[in-house]
Image 1 (cartoon, one colour):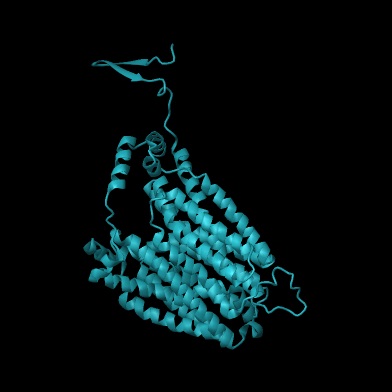
Image 2 (cartoon, one colour; image 1 turned 180 degrees about the horizontal axis):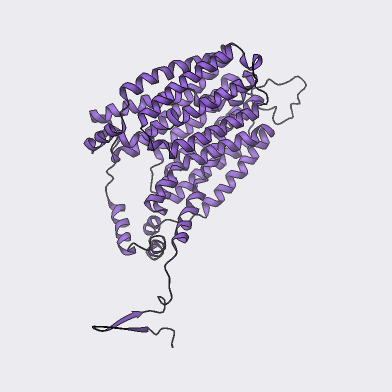
Length: 481
């Protein structure tokens, strides 16, 4: 039989003959298995999400490095020692920590920029973070530290928005939602890495390890497959047709291509900041949301993550670096529960439980500090209290405010509210970190915990009065839409 001949299949039925024609290209062709399709959606998404690792490492960088960087230069210390060239004061430490959030805030408004394409947007974010870590490696003074943290924060602020677009374009809807939920877990995995190897290497070695990780992530990003939307945009219709057929064989590729083209020409219906502020119902909900984020940040967790090792050292806990590692691992596990399990519960009840629990645990921690319980009773008393504190805080005050967005706002407002959340929560984290540093340095460790207690107590009243129940917020969303 010639290569280009058609195969004729005849089937006998009660009504006569049925003829089915297949070209050679179709002969023996089998649709890709479901497992294979899932792999080709998950693997590129996971590789792209690894972009968050360098940011997570930078987020955890202060805790293991500040004990060295804030230490005064010894008289006998060599001036040729590269580490001795960099010293910062405690007052400067909060500013250095905060510049990560300044970069994150500055780049977030540009994260919805689609002209580059999602893949190349992720690539830009990974490139900025790689440059930031190389700058940290070559640091000579505080300005290098500030620039490094700003670039890494900017890379995350811009790249995370592009990453969400990329996952949405490569994966089917249900899988896209699942993988997008995991983005923060990669950040927290970077935190664990920083706390795990940071105490056992010096400042330069830490930066070299993080730079290598950033370069590897950048290398993976370069080879990410281009999603169908970008292929259509660049005129590669045939390649887009093949990719859609492979990833979604149950869909008609021609129909999907038409939808992609229509979507590219559709006017954006998302609400702007002005649209949200003009409508009284949305304005009220934005205020409720902003106050919830304020209580999230000012009730203590962000500052304790920056100064973790110094906190445990001040409490008198043995091996503060290992205590910090246990603390951050508990934070990671609590976030896993908060991301995947808390949304199934009544959010108001979870917030109320968290606010009450955090307040009680802060009271216990203040008593432990004032009575010096770590020396009088058990060396790890503060560690146990702080572990309970970070777990109870994370599953409620730490996780719930962001999950309130779909309940308080219509779908058209989601993009602008998420951007507001990232910028507002970053600036609040910067502010509370500085307040914590000043009170810790000038008064003592118990002072900032007294502030946290006052704020978490007010959060109880706020949750009771202003946070809607799940069923009520659903009605609000229906009215708004």
